[in-house]
Length: 170
Image 1 (cartoon, rainbow, N blue to C red):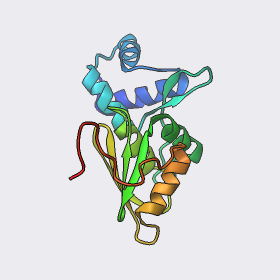
Image 2: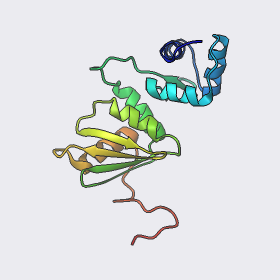
Image 3: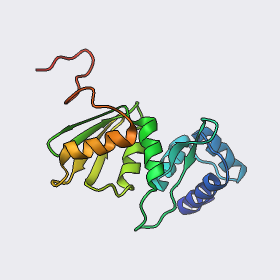
């Protein structure tokens, strides 16, 4: 039986050496190495390792892990890829920015933002498809939102807080 640290070290090494595009694929490779892990365990391991899916040549996606170093930030090209792939909308109010993603993708974008060292970003809180970003006072929510829109390639079509389909502004 392996420890969590041993399993995560193997996962990190496998992602670095092979194209791994899904959690079931990773589970199978771990099994081949004598490690049984549930999908939930693999999912937690990937999250704890900071693994994100990136687009690779040919248009497919694969997991990648930025090299860990406490003072090192994620490369800006990685942040651009993550933002361009998963950000659907960026709006702001005061010093808060709301970033919308497809369901299940918010944690990937938030993790990339947290590791980005982006100037003016104090931190993020991610749900399933929504991220709250807190902007530093000197840049404000609108300034941070502008940076995030530029990184992701989305436009400010809403001009403010978005209305969810089927709801009315009260």
